[in-house]
Length: 503
Image (cartoon, rainbow, N blue to C red; front, side, top):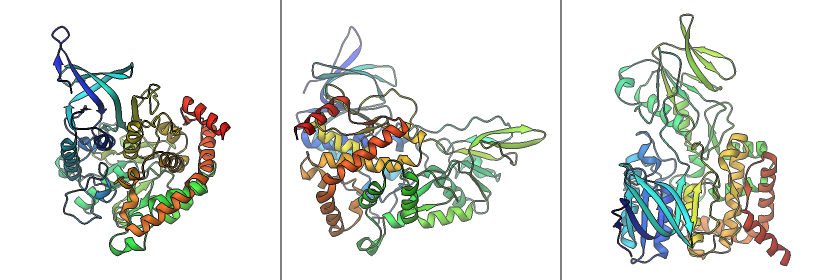
């Protein structure tokens, strides 16, 4: 292990490491967990994050956020929570951040980690089997990390939501990330609130307002609507875990079997009817969010109005204040109203495409332009195993431009994600030790007792190879229909074709 040195001529700090991980959110910590199983104490990991601590998007998000899923399933690898709560408990922001730090503490005991919080990666170059990573601190310092491997665990690149820009001077535009709905000026006011958006942030915000201010006018502009996975059906509590609900893997498998790349409306309606819950009369979006029936009822009862349209602006004209909607409709609103922006968290902004693994095989990139899994936590876990096993350039995983597909078809989006995960996990299962799957503590099936999980595992082992062609045809159909990036990397595709010709 080399000691960091500082160049007098360039004032650039230089670090040498076996692995550099950029990003200390859920994807980065899962990558770090896996790396700690392959590296020894005399090898070093450099961990870089632009934020001042671990936690990723959870550092910036609104204070009243609650975890979607039972807290034990949101972790790095198989690290258990120390929180003394019922397994079904939904952790708060501070509790999630505490667990991130707990995970990092444990991993520090397993492997040498040099942490650079408040640092951003500027560029990287892959040269002769090594990667040179140029970084800059928030204070302007420069650093170059020379590493054998680099994992860019950017995930969805979620950033705080700014208030919406509006024309009216008679209303107040805010964002949950900069304005706690439970305090400050919004508490001192009794004016109506208009929540813009219909996803999980909108549900959290509506629930917080309705709970905190009973009787206050709270309205929702829900766009094309969102439906959620019913927590009661996905994660039944208590003894019902033995016989109730449905394993997430079985739901994904059923959806993938029904989907043919063209019938997303029928598949979505089937999944929504059996396993969903929704607030709005129409619900075209499913972003794999989770909501309980009780939360849904409470929000529905507390809302004054739900508008199925998209927000455009608020203007003052002819002595009144009007909200303009995409359909051309308008709605008169009370001066002093609050406009709360709960839209667009998963958009991630515009970034150049890069493959999930570089041509040289030393750089792994986890982001939504070349997604290999439905969730970045899974990508951080499984891609890092493939990297250290030397398999990442051999397995012809499909990558998907998730952002592009979601823009083109909100209905095809979740169907394709389920198919993508099923297909790639099938390929990975054939090349990694069984222990890789057994140690995957982020597997949602772990909510259920072992006998139910084992039955699902046996079904997967017996059927995943023969279902692979069907899954691949679906992904190929989606690529052709929507003109999106969806397929193996060119070099891996050529190698796969050659193997199939030999077979």
